[in-house]
Amino acid sequence: MSETGAELLKVAARAAREAGVFIRKSIQSEIVVNEAHHHDLKIQLDVDTQELLTRTLLGAYPDHALLGEEGGEGSEGQGYEWIVDPIDGTVNLAYGIPHFCVSVACRHQGVMEAGVVYDPMRDEMFSASRGGGAFLNGQGIRVSERGDLGEAIMALGFSKNRDSIDKCLELYQFYAVKARKLRAMGSAALDMAYIACGRMDVYIEQGIKIWDVAAGQLLIEEAGGRVELTPRVEKHHFHVKAWNGRMDLPFQ
Image 1 (cartoon, rainbow, N blue to C red):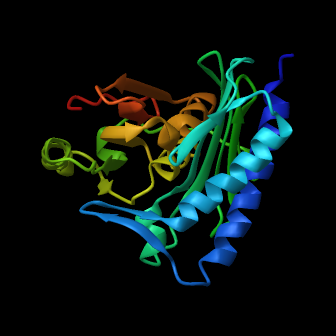
Image 2 (tube, rainbow, N blue to C red):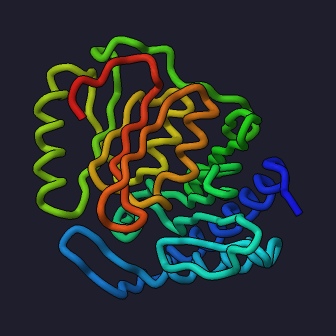
C-alpha cells in the first residue's frame, strides 16, 4: 500500500516533536557521554531519542525500514525507509549551546517523500513533502533571492578527518573575502533548513552522513533551491553542496 507525502509528513512531524519534548526534559539532567572522540561525542541521549523515534515511526508503519545515526531496523519489503538523526548538533547540546535539532525524513524507493527538521529550543518545525512545498511552523517558505556572492551568508562545515578539515580551511580562505559572512554552527540539518527559509544562502561540507541531510535536501528543493550530494567511499557518506540556486560557487 502506498503512502502519500502528507500522511508521511504528519507522522514525521509528530515523531520529531515528541523527540524534541523528550530532549528538552532530558537536558535538565546530567548528559551521559558514551564515547568521546577527538572531533565528536556520542551521548546516551542520542540513543534514547532514536529509540523513541523508532517506536513512533515503525509503530505507525511496521512494514517500513529505519536508518539512523544509532543504527537501523525494520523491513525493507515496502520500499519505504525512514532516515533519522535523533540529535543533529550533539556536541552543541552537550556543551550547552542551544543550536541542535531532530531530523526525520522518509524516502520511497530512493526518492525523498517527506521530511522535517525540528528545533526544540526555538520550537521551529521546518517541514516539506514532495510536490507540496516547504513550511516553517505552517507558513510557506522560500530560499533567498540573493544572486550576488558578496551578499551571501555561507555555512562551511568541518568534517572529522584531517583531509576534510584541510579542504574546509581552503574553502574558508577562498570565500572569506568573497561572501558577506561565513558560519560554522554545528548542525547540518539546521544549516539546510535556514537555506530553505532564506536565512542563509549556501552550505558546503566535505563529508556528511545521509541522516544529517536527508530532510534538509527535500526542504531546500521544495523551497526552490538546489542540493548536490556526491557519494564518498564510506557507506551513507557524502560531499554536500546546498544553496539557493541563484549564485555561482566557483570553489567547492
